Amino acid sequence: MQPVMLVTGGSQGIGAAIARLAGRRGYRVALTYRANQAMAETVARDIEAAGTAARAIRVAMESEADIMAAFATVDRDFGCLDVLVNNAGTTGPTTRIEDVTAAILDEVLAVNVRGAFLATREAARRMAKDRGGAGGSIVNISSRAAEFGGAGEWVHYAASKGALESLTMGAARELGARGIRVNAVSPGLIETDLHARAGLGDRLARLVGGVPMGRVGSPEEVAEAVLWLASDAAAYVSGAIVPVSGAR
Image 1: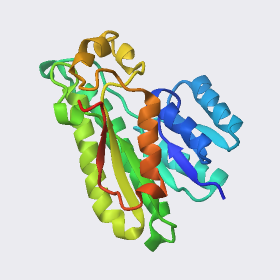
Image 2: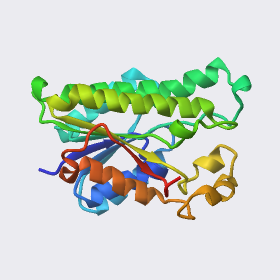
Image 3: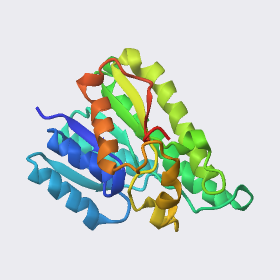
């Protein structure tokens, strides 16, 4: 039976690259999207063209009901869940600390922290061997901002990714004996439209000089790290935060 992967935020960027690579590696893939159904369905068709099944599921990650419904859809359509990738996230607007509002914090933390935590909870309920599950793997998509802090741009976003890394380490220790590995990938400067959507279209060009390898990365390079962590090749890896950042 082909394994099953759920990728949150799988309609574009890094999430789409993960979903497509998973399909090529033989996974049946459920991917969530928030608004752009057409993009999500394009990714799903690409996965199906690779010879496996795919589902695109609309989910607002700040909604517990939506998250639980997505897992119920996976249960119904695919059965046992093998891998969860917590990729869905939002940066919030570019702003300095003194201009961050409670509404900005609520949005960023609800999606990046609470949403990932609730998805992890639902995965653990299904995967944990002491609850009748077969074990599994959870991979969280963090950011190098968690270490650098996002000063002058996204301190609120960086703080949310720091929380996600704490969740990664705590969940790995709590769930390890129950058959679940939990790791994170921490991308650096990656060629996606995230920067342009945040109004920072020149950001990659401005910052690439600080990358020791001298270039930005691709979503596909992040996806390769995720698929490795999800695989049996990483069977003794848990609680790791893996930078994919060209040494930045």
